[in-house]
Image 1 (cartoon, rainbow, N blue to C red):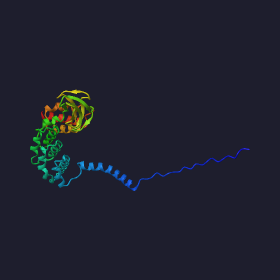
Image 2 (cartoon, one colour):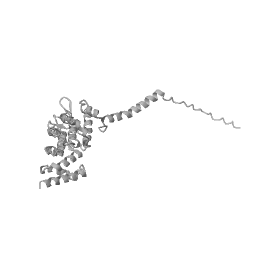
Image 3 (cartoon, rainbow, N blue to C red):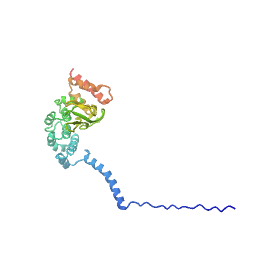
Image 4 (tube, helix red, strand yellow):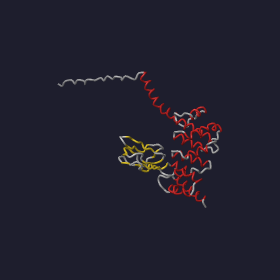
Length: 288
């Protein structure tokens, strides 16, 4: 006779509840998450040029020598008032003339553009003429473009130069220890390469114009002082503005700089190509 089967032993799993976050921990968590979201907004709010400034803020920002971006933001908004034909902008015209000799390149560059918005501005014409000798090619170019609005072609050579690639040479003999890649889009002042020279010293090679890197010496290359390190083609926006200005003031001598932009190349947009064609036609018609 078989033994009665014994029931299988039953096991009971004791579930332990994980301790939850305390109230203070929750508050700290939400505060941290809020700050993570807030900080980018505050950075954007303080650097966005579109944030409307009061007249008092405009005046303060135009004199804030410690924060060049504040000056730029104020300049942009004064320029917007000028384009809206807001008479209140005239109160800052003396500041625009003053800032034409500001030590910060970006400020002078923006200032040259703003003064071109009003060809009747007192002192603007003279200030822009002086800016044609600025050490920065971008400031010279913007001043020349603005002068066209005054009916002045004195900056024509600087406008033609805006169509030319920037050839960047080495300040010292040394070795390239880091370099960007050809074809990379780069902003004005963007880092292209690093040159090691002397006793482990590093020189940062930066682009004087916005555009696209056409060529650059590779990492490890030995470079003599004065030798070419990189070539940067100008940005589409820069070429477009230069071609539009030459449509009005260009001469036959400028055609060699214009004709390459009529070619069917991948880096040249259809708008730029068409503008180059129209600019060539306008120049040839003027000399008939």
